Length: 167
Image (cartoon, rainbow, N blue to C red):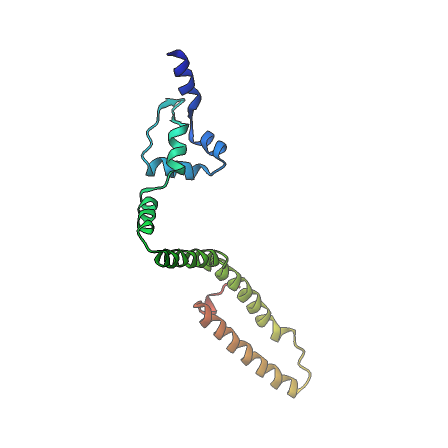
């Protein structure tokens, strides 16, 4: 009996140990334990210990939805199964492609940095131009109007009023 208890104790692992053994993330182990309602076999130092075999089975066995899909596909004709798997492949390709795009917050941050930098240059530009004669003064006025127009367009594009910039 003691030998059998030693074997069971050897199989008891916490979530971190199971994740390390299976080379997967702890959150994945935890999610599978919760979804499959695996109960702790014991508790040590306040942490639940699980039977490694039960957790591995919960992780690597098909879920109910996967089993249901497999049963549905098994009842399909070969042409229907091919269509089903092609549709699934297209969905996976779309998800993979979507993950390769920038997150909207990254785009917003980059846009705001570019916008702030551009606004700084536009605001300082009229001050850096030397006015020597009347023609230069007219050109400077024209450039200033263009800069104000560009500032208004930048503000409109980002939804931030030009006077609310703070730079």
